[in-house]
Image (cartoon, rainbow over the protein chains, first blue to last red):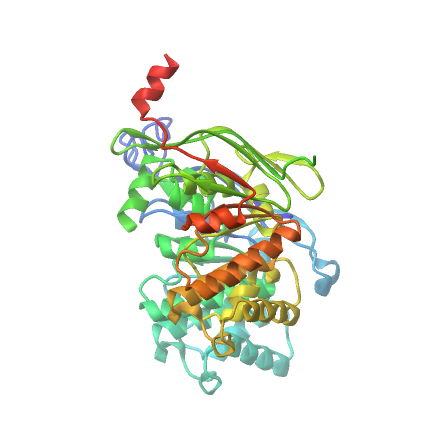
Length: 285
Length: 240
């Protein structure tokens, strides 16, 4: 198995920061706010590897820093520390363009945008962040395809249609605005849009939170089907242990910006090692 | 005699419950081996740690003591206690199967796809994988009308047959079975027993816990009797 992503010592501090920030925050200190300078240590020392075709879970409650991890990897914000190397998998279909190694935080804005548009996908909890509500469902997908150099109008429309069909959005609604869709359908359009460029790496941030259970199950099914079909590597951020159990093979647990536990998902759920994870699992079952 | 597929040497598992500030032993100093083409059965009263041993080998539990040596198809030895998460995932995908009493699966997948899933993961083409799943389900007497629907609505016995079929289909070299026939009617249990006998003749190494002593007598080549681990206080005294 090949590594697709290597993350080392990722850190993010909001605020001025001071020499005591790290020592005075974290699970032991029971806070992520530095008492000396009021800076927020959103994450510190986060390291993990992701392999091709693997789904990794990041679990933890609100404020644990799990979304900050994917936001920095997706270049929505710059980290304060650390490095991440993306090993672009060689794909025969794309000729010589891939197979490269990118140090994500050393890239300029244009290079980061290129990766976002071509090689990464992101699905947000809130569809308004991932979709343009003022253009149609088909248009949303076309927009992403245009940004990834697909220029032919007919080809774009065909691709958009097949993606929406794949994510079970009724074709009769291709030309409707996403704001008129149900929450579950908006999420499926978002997934279709994220997948439009067949990215090898997909970030999913609380994508089923707030949906009712039957809709949740369909989205989870869809994600797994896609993963089996396209072998997409995924990082799934969620506070929902059920989602972690169903989707992921390995997981990391975060609290106050730190990784407190990492392991096989079934092991974390059945034999959690850290006091916090034990409490988390016990309160969920 | 050929070297065992699995050699468990002084396995121990203690749960450290931080909140209650307690140390709970579930297995203590367990040793045995499992050979190709043989079934080793674990017997003992409730609380003897039978499932704990299976989970430690599958690494759903992190062992706290001993060694679990697994010899893979190429003859390489790996201590499961020390293996990386990715090594374990690779073993689970290719060599070690675990059939528990519960079937976890997605609510929308057809039974055929649930059973074929381990083959999909090993890169077998969809149609061929489904074909093999169908053959196995037929052998296990699961009515054909159920194959295209999700097992979510099945009876306990039907679900268990799906569960077993999924565990058997990729022909793991080592199969861990936790009460595989417990919820089955006698005829279906008989099918499963015959299937286990066939897997044995085909060389699968198996480690199993059976609900009925009769099943153990019929299938087991070796029987390992487990007793509940001593209380932590006893263990500490022993050590001091």
